[in-house]
Amino acid sequence: MSNITTGAEQPYEVDGCRGVLRVYSDGSIWRSSDPSFKVPVHDDGSVVWKDAFFDSTHDLHLRLYKPASPSTTKLPIFYYIHGGGFCIGSRTWPNCQNYCFKLALELQAVIISPDYRLAPENRLPAAIEDGYMAVKWLQAQAMSEEPDTWLTDVADFSKVFISGDSAGGNIAHNLAVRLGAGSPELAPVLVRGYVLLAPYFGGTVKSKSEAEGPKAAFLNWELIDRFWRLSIPIGETTDHPLVNPFGPQSRSLEPLELDPILVVMGGSDLLKDRAKDYAERLQNWGKDIQYVEFEGQQHGFFTINPNSEPATQLMQIIKTFVVEKST
Image 1 (spheres, helix red, strand yellow):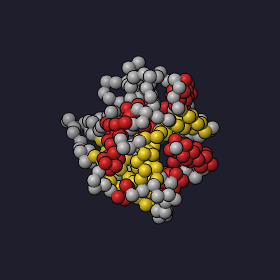
Image 2: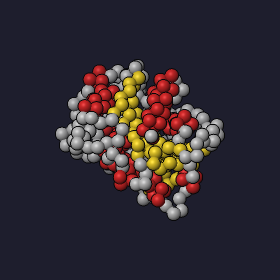
Image 3: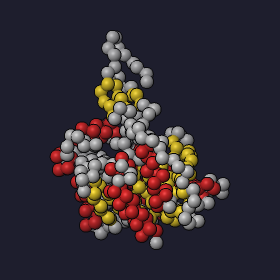
Image 4: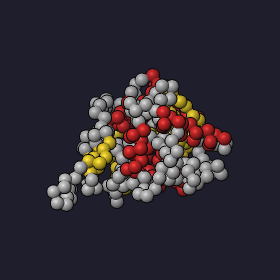
């Protein structure tokens, strides 16, 4: 961190997120090298993994996972884009790794977990663009004369799913809109569906669940508001089209052809009402949308307690969605 001071005034902290990000009055930023979720990594050898560059310009990596002993010769591809309010998080964090291990085994799939540029150093639309580049990387692999055989020997490029958790769910939604049904610009890669896990949407008018949500919630309103303040473009509001799919300047989703979308929410998540409204509007417009709500569950319940009964049920729902949309 570089400190720039005038006179005797020392910079002071003006914003912080979960102990791993601090923003100071002089504009300087401190990031911890440690994750905010200090849990052990459960790497028992049943899943093999490696990292790969997907954007050398911005020094961005993705992490690839696959079952050590796959059940079939060709596996579907499942993107898992991490959350963190666009401000924190990483493919390397233990909670992200552990969930990817579980996804690879339970889905019998190749899991791709990309990083993306974080705010406030890189405000939106940077994260959305990086999500797009992570998917274009897969197309390049599918078309390459010298591909990474670690991936291509087992991956079925015609069965791709894009999922995201919280901010990652927002990225997944924006990719669904950008790529459209059948993802023609990604050929020969074919996206079959999207999984939005507690997607992080916003808006200038508070929803009921946002207004009435408990302050003690894992993702409370104060933190939601702070993440948006640090991540939306300077001078914009949370009605920005990348934040609010139904904002005054947002492109109408009604005429768009979209691939199937599974939306998952915890019943006690402050973001619940926005996600439910999103699913209901798309359903009313004839889109292939499935909405699943887990009563009493908080934001991120499936990665915080991945072995819980609700998380186990969710994994089966995702598995069914992947199987049904792959045929």
